[in-house]
Length: 158
Image 1: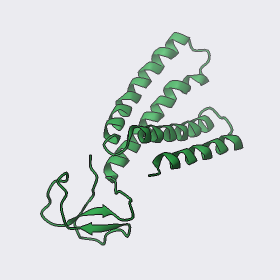
Image 2: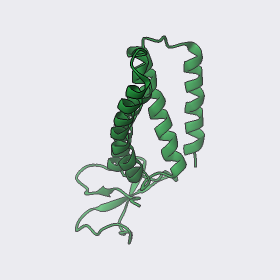
Image 3: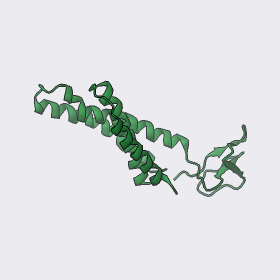
Image 4: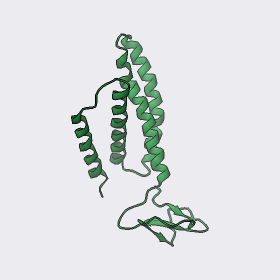
């Protein structure tokens, strides 16, 4: 698990972290610079892993939403055809979801990873339902999403 970000000293460290001069055994040795350590109990995360995870989950959820709900505009299409097409789209979804989970699990717990997935899924679905299906966004949907944000806060709280 990557727990520390490398800092080469070329720019000033962000205020929430301090410079640590001692290399940790789990981090590959670098010839110059220091490692960043959290201040105030905030553990720095590898930004690259986080971004890869979120981007892969976003792409995955676009495919998933198309597979599960894209056919709703084509109610006259034969059910068997819709199932096959949806399954093929879902295969593409898995090609992004599985790597997202593998990469993300290096930085997040399984529960945190699932929470990120659900937030991304609801965000993608909201945009999809409004733009593709032409549904209206109602106040109670937004209130429900606000409660989900509260759940995310609780899940990620140390």
